[in-house]
Image 1 (tube, one colour):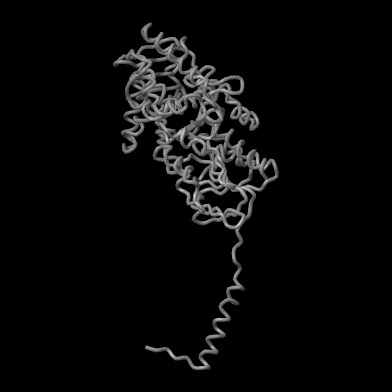
Image 2: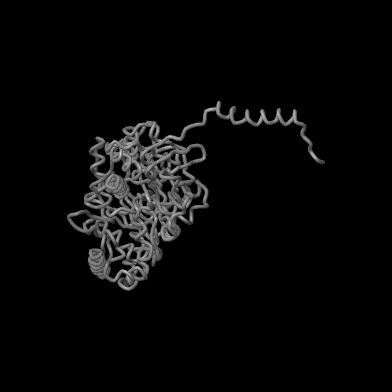
Length: 489
């Protein structure tokens, strides 16, 4: 059917079409907030970057996908009791950035409980022992000698790693071509040595030894120190004077919540998962489902694999994208059994346990400083965590109690509560404590890890030069990115 318009009808339509833009002009178009820096991620790395930038009088906004700040630090508030940490928890010597932040925020620290005997569950039998060997349970002399040589060798090898550019480490290609397991198998021959390493490595990296490259593992060991000297595997596995030396009063999530309070709630958007970062003219549009901000600089303060969830326009360089795709998250869970009192202390035990079987292989006394109630904590790591990813909460608790019972006997069944946190299942973490590098990744793609893309910058504990995978590394990475932005302003 042919549509025919008369002159009069055309005039009316012409006026109508003219009126449309006039009507639109009367409707206010929402303005897009403009800031100097948009920070994606409200964990310790993002908040630390925001703190430094705000101190330099730069306007910031923190866009956090969760309904809380803190990322992988999380407090559980117990009714009528103190808190328990379900995420990052321990701090120790040479972790200078987290120690400084705790002091700045007025958060005292206290020592992890170690008085009394530790426990080693091996071949179906629990043995209690006085820890005088730097965390090594009672084993045969041949195993002790073998482990001592191994730890000396791996520490010496780690001391050769270039912390800033590990891909330039002497013999980097060869070191990055093999897994940590390949190296360990070439050094250890006794079954007890291998069992203890099979426990220690997942406790440090939340991976099995077959997953990370040797070079990446050496880099993590070397990073467990400060300017006074390189890190050691001894420090990573140690309690007194080691990575598990102390705790923060009130729980480590206070590091994040107090930082957020200083920044102001108006500068922090919760429940705001960023979907797209688009360069438009000279500024970046950072968009979630409901909000868009315009920023001169953008900070991605998250683990590399989570960056892949964001659409970048223009796309990130292929090498950066390959890095993001090739760094899987470690697998990690925590379980904490709550008791009216720390009854194991009455039995002369300190709650430190090592087991060759079960969902939990490493335990610590997690009771508060005042001992007002008892708390037994265990890590669920790597393959043990993956096995439980599809299990029900009740089944996880059953296996957790069995693991505790192997080490400390039937009284573990008297728990008034068992707290479970499976970081693998947490939507905006998908594992922890950090992403890892399998063979070939560090030497081929490592140079993209900290390199900005235009004015998009990358923070997160994986990008730190010190204490990779720890709260200290997250904080220092945020401070580094802030300095990077300010230096090139």
